[in-house]
Length: 189
Image: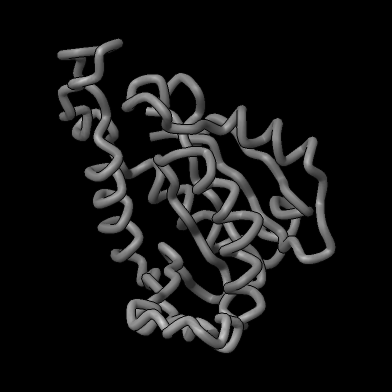
């Protein structure tokens, strides 16, 4: 695969190039190592593209996981202790809140990486919420979000978001005082 686009959110590109040069090279190597064409294995059942061969996001994610593991990037899972004191006094606590967690796809030396081949809301959540949370929990100082460019996303199931849309929204949203430096990488096969 190749990097087809780079967007610096809150100085992410500059920060990572300066503070995490070696890790950025590792990320770029992982991207180049994954052969996306091996994962064009999904046969669409959608009306608008029935029978068409598509890239499988699940298989692509596994390929990235395998490549990141080779250079000792860790998957991090943080247990969540959800507060129950905000329930009304006549509501009984939900036992399902006990096993909750948040995850970061890959983490190494305080740099977090998320791969997203899903819906748009997940891209926004990763950069504007999850990475801030992991920063506040003292796991990361900066992040990298890897997403498909539009052309690549068009060869996946409908609804997969893409780099160009994400960049447009982030640039029009602006930066908040709680945002951390994030480098958005748009990838293509």
